[in-house]
Image 1 (tube, rainbow, N blue to C red):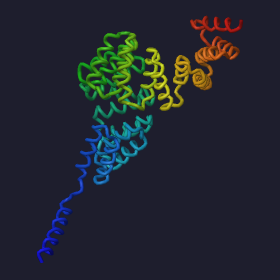
Image 2 (cartoon, helix red, strand yellow; image 1 turned 180 degrees about the vertical axis):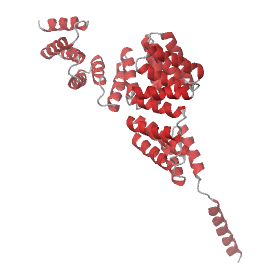
Image 3 (tube, helix red, strand yellow; image 1 turned 60 degrees about the horizontal axis):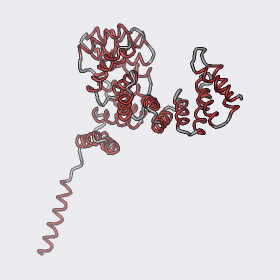
Image 4 (cartoon, helix red, strand yellow; image 1 turned 135 degrees about the vertical axis):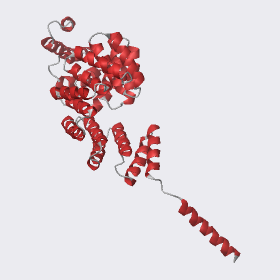
Length: 381
């Protein structure tokens, strides 16, 4: 009897322990997913957040983090679908339209983003933030007049909205009104001194005006305010390169690439700096990554061909320069560079033809014309 009682007690305890084990709640799964995201463990974060979203569909913080993970993975279509589902299910929540528009802009779906942000404006026609977002989307879509109209409306609704004024300044800059852009951007910085975008854009405008000291100042402030924003490191890198501080420039571009590994613009710019520093093997990797991300990139195949030539890889250099010529037959410079490759490979007739084609296409004032003529003269002996 005693053994039976003990056995019954054991079963009771086991049953009790099973009953006390609770499934994780949506909040618990979300927090675990967020922790994994912050630790850089994307697969774990995604699995936890998908479970959280299943338990509690269309919770904004969960969906927003899933969208960001999909961006990080390059799954822009999935990110857009998640954002679209949230916006459709929460039609009164402005955050849904903002999230969806951001996803559409990532995919360069500019007309769709404008339409999404029009719905956001209709939710609150006195929101300067809504007009500011739509104004930026209009600018990306090439609707400059509509962009300026929306952004002017935004700063009129809230003259102390530093973000809106910064966007207005950026739009003025892109439409060639640089003096007005500097004025608005300086106002934006004065209103919101901790607004990184205002500092970044002001720095870019000042750089293009040749005011390098001011450009570096504002780009460095932007990098300090937003160290996780790849764009601020990219712009700082370009400004430092502009004055020949290439080692520092390269360091900034490394940061930009680490923060946004799938941006071909950052890869290409990094390749350019590495080529200038004569770090050819690293430059080759950067240009190759650019082409993987953007197969129809206009300049990367030609530049890759050049650094492969510098690195002594003549066959590969010839292949990429041939691709560059096929893609852009009116560009004279790939002909010049492939001429050097042919000459090094002792393909004299091909080299002469390439140099002659360069002379046919190159501007009369181009200094490389003399070089090409000398190469032809030498090869014709």
